[in-house]
Length: 96
Image 1 (cartoon, rainbow, N blue to C red):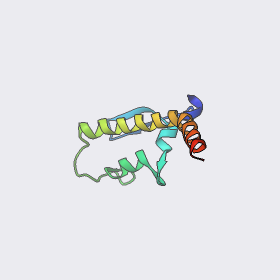
Image 2 (cartoon, rainbow, N blue to C red):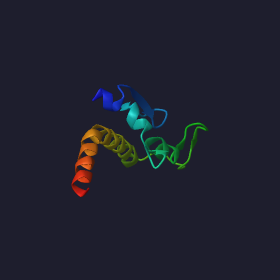
Image 3 (cartoon, helix red, strand yellow):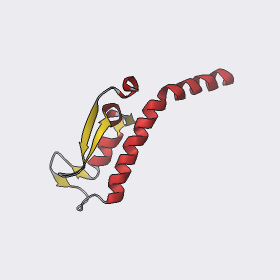
Image 4 (cartoon, helix red, strand yellow):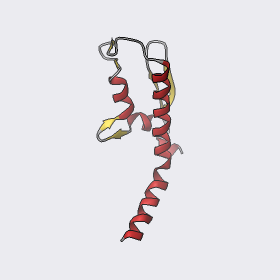
């Protein structure tokens, strides 16, 4: 498990009081289509560099829960990676 997730975690601050603790660093860095998923999600909502609220309002409870769910799903995909690769190889062999 540590090998798949990189063995390191990060705390992701959603605002000045609320953060998601122990997000696997590999999930934080994971990108889809060249975009880091979790970082991009936050960038659309909070500009941490300029300390400016992009939405003009605090994050809702649903948004906070959604962010946590996204982090868990990305972590699950990382853990499923070897099994997904093996299934893809078997499917390719059967098709080939």
